[in-house]
Length: 145
Image 1 (tube, rainbow, N blue to C red):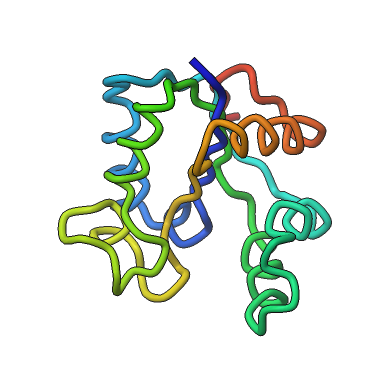
Image 2: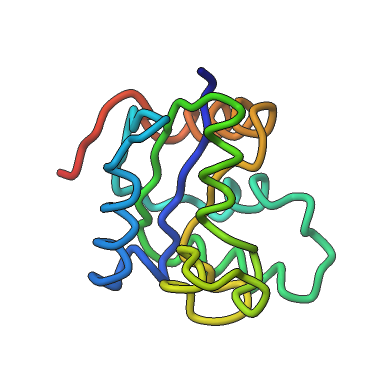
């Protein structure tokens, strides 16, 4: 089992139906374990670092503002490589218009990049993302204080 980072983006963290639907899927813990969840307002510097591969794209400043404007629900899950692939499949494509019918992003995303949830895309990125975010937020327990 390896770590992966999960973020309920603002477009799902503040929409009750979206948050409840995603939580229902996540809480099933079929082949993964929810290790932590917590409300956390990420600083712009963390978002810039997290999405550094998108720097230079026209939407990057908007993305940083969007992801750092409000607290989000951030957490850590543990999953095998195969389970993480299955979770990513159930999540759907990054762009809502390309997401398969029935995927979480098709059901709860709004449009374009307002795609409700971040989930590490591989074991290696999961380890790096959890390490990066752990410098800012506690990722070892479920807390909703």
